[in-house]
Image 1 (cartoon, rainbow, N blue to C red):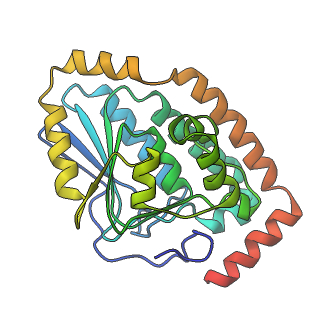
Image 2: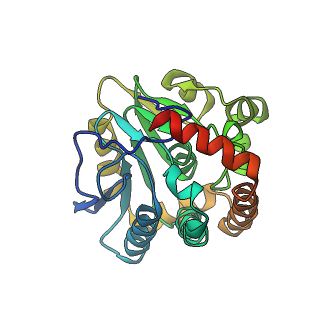
Amino acid sequence: MTIGQGISDGTALGGFRAHSEFRNHIMTITVAADDGRPLLDRKAYDRLAATLGEAADDDQVRVVVLRGLAGCFCLGGDLSEFLDATKHAGLIDAVTGMFRRLATFPKPIIACVDGDAVGVGCTILFHCDMVIASDRSTFRVPFVDLGLVPDAATSILAPQRMGHPAAFRFFCLGDTFTASEARQLGLVAELAEGSAEGRTFERARQLARKPVEALRQTRGLLRRDGSQLCERIDEEISLFHRALQDETTLRRLARIARLVA
């Protein structure tokens, strides 16, 4: 269910679950607004950053699972906050804080994707160590179509993961990738028949049983330096904020908002 250019019309989907659950050393976080909409607004960014911070500091948490709602991972940001200049400063702070948490998070993160992953709902996946998706999942980042730039340091992570030609298609052309295409390009680690949740938690339990320090050190060796990613996050957010002050971009966003209202 992709709405317009990948921005939610504000309709909550069925199957809403608790925002976070902890069991057997696995912290599960649902990527959604507080009211159950399949998007991220300022409150959701703040909540995600706070939950990740708690998970990083809690020795009982060994693995984090990010999941969406039933049939939809996340449709992106809350367009109404983009159009309200009085909310920009708080939104930028919240977005930056959440991205920095992801970039520097010290423990394994697995994403369970079932359905559409759009915009920021897709860029956060580049910070996950594994993305496990159902075969009905799709992936799209329509930032350029909206007059915006990528976020979450994906201007580094996407070419690194997918190669420049595929990253260019993804971000500049705004092509939608199927689950199979995303698997071939390295964004998705595993495809699951039907629901991805069973396979995701099977993998999470495997990781939770590993020697903690050896797993942490190995993951750290495999990942790019978080400080470099944070610098790029700040650069991207600055350009993103500047775009939100452009009248042409605002008219484009307002037109899309009317289409999905």
